[in-house]
Image 1 (cartoon, rainbow, N blue to C red):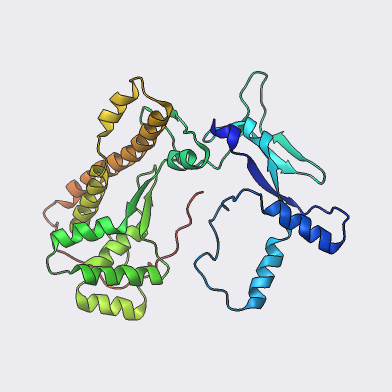
Image 2 (tube, rainbow, N blue to C red):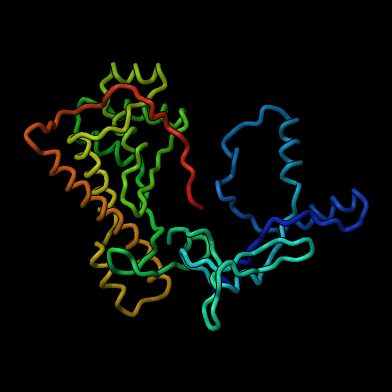
Amino acid sequence: MGSRILSRSFNVEKWDSGEDEEGAASAVTNTRSHEMDVDSPDGPEGAHEDNDSEAEEEEEEDEEDSSDTAMVPMADMLNARYGSENAKLFDDESELRMVSTKPIKAGEQIWNTYGDLPNAELLRRYGHVDLLPLPNGGVGNPGDVAEIRADIAVSVILQKDASLSEDSLRERIDWWLEEGGDDVFVVEADLEIPQLFISLLRLLLLDQGEWESAKSKSKPPKPKIDGYLLGIIYEVLETRLKAYPTTLQEDESKLTEQISRNEKHALVVRMGEKRILDGSLAIIRDLQAKHNGPKATNKRKGGGGGDSKPQKRSRKQ
C-alpha cells in the first residue's frame, strides 16, 4: 500500500515555460507549495547553523533554486532490494528514463534502489523491509544497524564509578557536542565498535585534571581499549539490548505465527538490531578473555588527550 501513496520526487533541470519572469516565478512557487519534502543524502545541511548575513541566505536560495522538483509516480512501480540494483533513473533534457545498469534476462526482476538502507529506515520511509540470506545464517537486511545513545553510557558509568557525578558527565557530553561530536553512535553489520564512541567513553572516565586538560586543548582521548573499558562497552551494549521487551529467540518464534503485516515488519526491524547487538556482545566477550591474562588490569583509565577529535556523523540515508 505504501508504494501506491508515496510518490518519489527527483531534482530535474529548471523548466522554462516561456512566461515572463514574474509569471515563471509564480508558477514555480505554486508548484513547490505542493511538492513532497525529500531528505537529501547527507541530511538538511545547515539546519543547526546560523547564516552570517542576508546576502549569504540569498546566495544559498539562488543555488537551491537552480533546479525544479518533479514527481514521478511510475518510479514506485519498480521494486527495490538491498544490493540488487540493476536499473536507475536518468534525467534527460525532455524526459526521465529508467535504464538498466546491468544485464537483465527475460523474466528476471527489475530492481530500483533506495540507497541500501537499514530496515528501520526502509520501514519508516517507504513502508517495507528487506529479507535476504545473511552470511551467518537466517534472513534479514545486511545493511541493518543498531544505534547506541550516549545517555546509556552515562547511566552505566555512574553505576560503576561513584566518584563521578551526573552533572560532570553532562558537562563533558555538552562539550563533546559543541566540538562537533554526536550523542548517537551506529554499530553496523561488521560489528565494529565506533572509534568515536570509544573516545567518548574515555572522555567520560577521565579524572578532573585530565578532563580540564583535554578541554583546554580541545583534544578528547584517543580511542584505545583496555580491560576496564571493555567492561563498560559490554554493559552499555547489554543495557541497550535489554531495552527490548522480548529476546531475539522469542521474536524468531513469533515470526512463524500468523501475525499482521505491520507486526511482522516491526519484528524484522527489531531482530536485525538485536542480531547486531548480540554479535557485538560476543566479540566483546572474546576480547575480554584475551585481556584477562596475567598482565590484565581492571583499573579505571581515561587516558590523555589525543587526536580523535569528534566529527559529525554522516548517516546513511
